[in-house]
Image 1 (tube, one colour):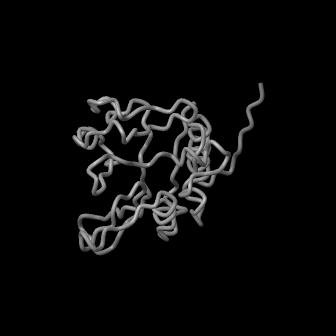
Image 2 (image 1 turned 60 degrees about the horizontal axis):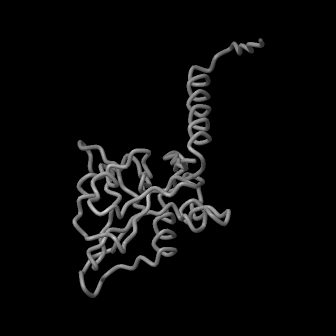
Length: 183
């Protein structure tokens, strides 16, 4: 089984509740005393997409976390085997007892998911695996007031995106004809 996140930017209220919930449930605190201005590790980050021609006016906010890739480059790059795939939900996890802090995973990940805290060891989104195992949603999904973040089996997420994309295409031109094809 492979679980995936789904993010609908049109439903995002830019409230950052997903990021706050993630930091709270994982006890990720800022290091204000040691590093002024630090926000500490951020497993889920709300990023701002801007128009290079007008950086003062954000185009969109996007909530990102580890993609829990099907072929994770971070796992391949890890020389100690500290990064592994959990089989029940397909979550890509890290065994911090095996991590040596080499940062190869960070260099290999094209999404910036690996984070490093003051101890120098890698940590990242774990898909709230402990919550999923007891039938609860990840903290970011539960906290999202706009319903912009969802999680589920990748087949269900893909089906949902195909249905949403198809409905946008069909109704974009406001057709006066609807065809029902029966077999």
